[in-house]
Image (cartoon, rainbow, N blue to C red; front, side, top):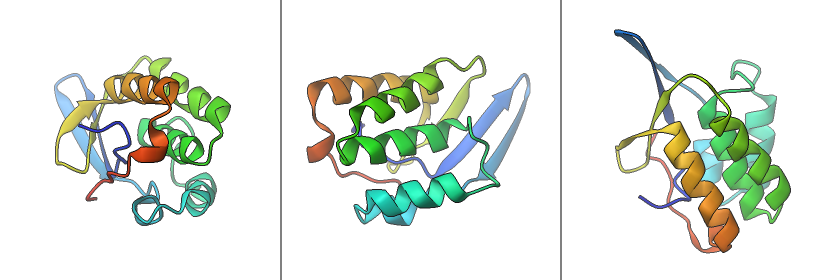
Length: 123
């Protein structure tokens, strides 16, 4: 799985009960490489919780693509600071724990590879 993968669907598991919800994390704008539009869409989405891991990861990716590594790093670190476990679906249909994606994103940020990664989510 590439680090630049954009999240489209969030699944939150709590105990024996799992709920799934579709969240708008600016997939179309991210897939088209329009980072500024993606940031504006995500940040203006009042229905999306400010601490939602899909929101934070996609914002981090968008900021990293724009060269704002400080803000990107903050977004990824906020995912890692969460207590609850979220599973996120990637563009390849894989369910990956949000913390795993955040750690990979931080590694890509440190390696400077966001400018060359363009994989996106299917949903």
